[in-house]
Structures are given as C-alpha cells and as structure tokens.
Image (cartoon, rainbow, N blue to C red; front, top):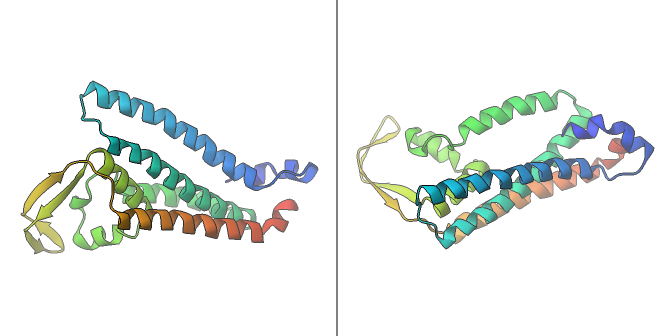
Length: 196
C-alpha cells in the first residue's frame, strides 16, 4: 500500500498502471501463503490426519481472501495517497483485527454478543469456512445462558465438510463487494495518483 507513494517518481517518469503496485503486494503475500500451506500438509501427513477431498476447499478460501485483500489494498492505497497517516493507523487496526478474528482461540470463549458480532467479520467467515473443510466444526446443544455466555450443554464435533451454500454465498459476496468498492474508489481517483 505504501508502494504507491514510494514509487511516485516511477509513475511520473513512465506510465505504469498504479494498480500494479497493489496487485504485486497482494501477489507476493499469496506466494507466501502457498509456501506456508506446504508445511501444513506435511504436518497433517506426519500426524496421520485424515485427509479428504474437503481439504481442496482451502484453495477456494484462499481465492476469496485474496480477492478481499486486493479490494482492501485498493481502498487503503487510495486513502494513503490523500492521507499519509492512514497507513500507520491501518497497521494498528490490522493488528487489532487479527486478534478479534478467532484464529488463535475458539469462538466459544467469547461472550454470546461478541460471537454474534463475529458473524459480520468477513475474515471470521473465511477462516471458519476453511476450518470446517479441514477439521470440521463443533456445535453445542443445550446449556444455559448466564451473563451472555453459554454454560454447559453437550458439544459435538462434526466431520470435515464443505460449507453450505449460504456460507459460500456470503463469503463470495463480501469478497467481491470489497473488491468492487476498492476498484471503483481506486479508479475514480486515478488522476491524483498520476500527479504524485
């Protein structure tokens, strides 16, 4: 995202589509992702994890996250051109966003109101869909609601499966919506990029 500002002199000397810098940043992160997926499969094989065809859904989730990230990159790049401090604020918000997405912890430890709020977090939707395809999902039946937390009940682990159509529709829609907004913002403010 800061590539656009730092390469402003290159943009002035020769024509390069400004979106190339955003796409290259997302592309290098995608290559990084695929290099980290290889050890995941090796560890799964070493631990004799049951591999199934549902693991292929991880590729779909990676495509969705890439589309979402490209859209966010276009939005942030557009804002950074006009407000330089946005980049530093974005890094702080990105760290908070990372810890608010239940990747390192199960969503069940959150209060019920926060669990409901997580349903509006697009990264949670991408991560939970990939988790459902690889390790399955856990549901809790019964229990008592005390101070906004579900206490007791019986937890059942479901086998890995491909997320249902509704989840896929929401994840694709959120990824494509962010990309569309990013693309429209980026190209409607293209003229200021050329005069960096």
